[in-house]
Structure formats: structure tokens, C-alpha cells
Length: 453
Image 1: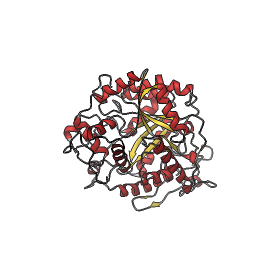
Image 2: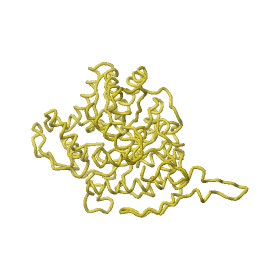
Image 3: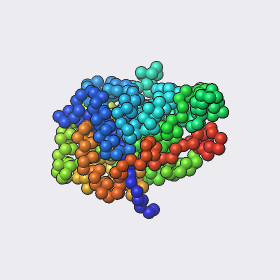
Image 4: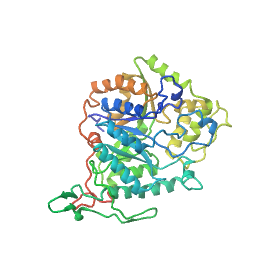
């Protein structure tokens, strides 16, 4: 395959203190709980011409090990509910995309469709929805369930949920609202479409009571890499946030998912694959390594074990020797792809339990890069030009300095090589990502059908 040309896309993933599990203990980490910090982060990313900021979410406080949870900033505790936060950020920024996570497991399609459509209007076309199914074992208990929802059931619900939301976003054609004072006609009833969805999980009449949005619909993002996740992404996603540790795995995943799109009437350009990358950058290799080790030294064993338990399916490893091998693990009903990635990593590199939790303390199973800007860009470029990624979701190890280091050192090198923009190409997130504006599936002459989405 011929190596590609062009420029890559960048998202800025914000964990409040930094993506490293021990970042909150670092003296340079943001320690406050003010909206100003989120605004400052987003404006930094916007000034550097990032495509979007990306916010994760959880709907529980992780109580399986309260002592370990008390030592982590990433125990499910969120200062702001993400959609509320995006509304505030929409008024404080002008160009950058605003992507938030919302689970299909514990909300209703109509509410979610209405909320994200509203944010797309408020931001002038910059909203994106990161579709997830909630794998946190404790989350189900906050929504009337007696046990966690099995993986297969979560994805069946998610598939139908996505279909309903996409249908609701096409309730109105772009020119449905006439607002004609002389005739007294506010909207054209022929351009209003009632969904009338009846399925296994949802019964939703519609229509949505929000006009079609500036982007046609918010950008659909997905973070799953299991077999079910890849198939759902091929049907519905426009951006995938994923995790592969090697070039070989990244190229294989890229070809696999892009190869599924034709089944759903889609082209490879309809989907951008943007894996997570955890970059620790310095002006020298020694400086970068020093920054990384300063964070690693702050990892407490209880936190490391709890991190492994959360990513490896909830298995308690406290009874096993820290300097012994990872024991066999039962198949997870939580994040299957992440559990598989960790097991493969431990076996491939012959890691002990301690080495494994230190190995993932920063990137949580995503791609970890430590070095100079030149070395980091060499690796980003290699993955991009070999069709292993369309861009990257940058997971700053420490906030704010991890983001400012990337902006001051890595971005100029990307631009020097012609790999990243100097200015935004368009006014909407969809335009800047190079995604087409979708036709309304219900409009006369529309090329896409519900099935093709």
C-alpha cells in the first residue's frame, strides 16, 4: 500500500489533573475545581488548532476498594457533568470541537438527542457525542439494576439507541422552518418527519423538538474496540477513539474497521480513527525521562492494583505477589478489548504485576511515548503514513504542563513536516475533521437510508 500524504487530526483529552493515575499528587497539577481551568485548557488547545477537546465520563464512584479509591483522582468523581460543561465551553470558544462522553446504558435516546442537538446549535456546529456502553461494575446500581449489565446486552441496547438518536436528529429537514411572517407559516409540515420507532429496548415516536443542527447532526464518536464495538463503529461512528500499542496492531485495526464500512454503504473517508497517545515530551531524552519518572514515583501499590482491577475486568489481584506474573483472568463482562490488550502486553513483555501497573499508570493501555519532540513526531508520523491512524487523541500526562509541552514542542515539529494545520479549515467540527455533512435520510432524494447509517 502506498504511504499516505496530508495532515493528521488532533484531539485534546482532558483529565482534570492529567492522564497519569498519580498526576494529582504532582506539585504542578491543577488542584482547584474551577470552570476557569477547563476554559483555559480548551482555549490552549484551540489556540494550537486542535480539532477538538474530549471529555470522558462515569456515573458512579468506584467503591470496590474504597481505600484505593481515596488515593485516586480518577475514581469516577467528576466535577462537572460533561454536557453541562460543554454548554459553558461553547460560549468561551469559537472554533474547537467539543466532544463529550454519554452512555447508552443509563439514559434515554430522546433526551440525549435533544441535549447534543442543543449544544451543536449553541456552539455553531462544534458538538460531538462519544458513544459508550457503561462497563463500570458499580454504575448499574445507580440506575435501578440489581447487577452489572452483560457486555452483549449493553451493545444490543447501544445499537438500537444509536439508530434512534440518528433518526431523531433527522426529524426536520434543513429548510423546514420557513418563519414566513406574510403567509403565517412557521414551518413546512412536509419537511417534518416522525420516527415512530418500536424496538426491543425503546419505543420513541418523535419528532425531536429541536431543529436540524448546523452540522446536520453532531459528530458520532465511539471508544469501543471489541468485536461488537468495531461492528457498531462501522455502522454509526465517524471518529473512533481506540488503543493499539504496536504499529502492526494499529494497521490491522485500521484496515479491519475501514473494511467493514462498505457493508453499511459508507466510504473509508466517513470514519476517522484517532487512537489515544500519552506523550511525555522534553527538550532532551533525559528531560523527558525525568518528567515521566517523577510521575511514576508517585504511584502507590494500592492504586496500581486498583487500576489493574478496573481495566482487567474487576479481578482482585491483591492476594498475588506484586513481583510475580499476572495470573489467568476470567473473561471480562466489562471492557473486553482493554482486558485482552493488558493480558497480551503482560505476556509479550513478560511483566510482573508491579511492572504491568507501572506500565499502564500513565496511558491506561494506550500508546505511551517518552522522548524529544523529534522522536515523538517520528513515531506519530510512522503510524499516520502507514495507515495506522488518521490522527491522535492526545492524553496529557499532567495538566496543564503536559498540554503546553506538547503545544510548544511537538506541534511546531508536526507543522515543519507538513503534518498539522496552521489554521482551521472550516467553521464546524465536521468540516475541520474532513467529514461530509450528512443528508437527511427522510428527505426526498436523500442518498442514505437508515440502514446505511
